[in-house]
Image 1 (cartoon, rainbow, N blue to C red):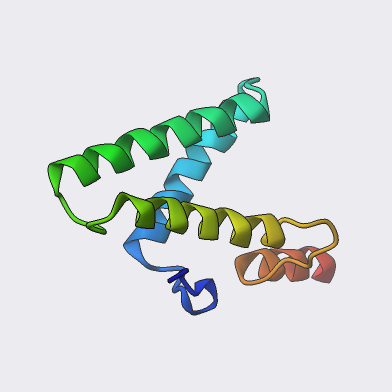
Image 2: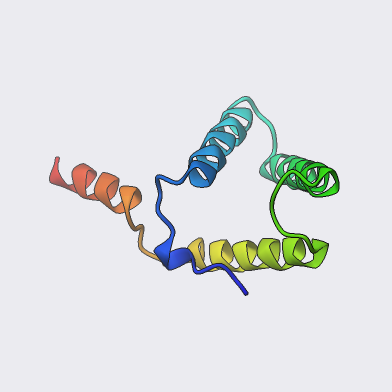
Length: 102
C-alpha cells in the first residue's frame, strides 16, 4: 500500500536523514555539479543502500517489489509537490511569509 505522505511527521528520523542528504546535494550543486548528475548520484545511492539493507535482512519489507512500490509512491508524491505553481507549505511557507513581512 502506498505511504500516506500527508500524515508524515517532518521530525521522523527518515525525513531528517533525507533532509541531510538533500543538504549535501544542494552543496554539490553550489560547487558546480549539474542537477541531473546529483539526482543520478542520489538514485544510485538510494538503490545501493536499499539493496544492501534488503539482502542482509536488516529491516524493512520482506518483498523487493514493495521497495519499488515505495520508491514509485515517493517519486509521484514529490513530482506533485514540485509541480509548477504549487505554493510552499510548512517551513517553506513560513520562510516566504517572513520574507514578505520585511
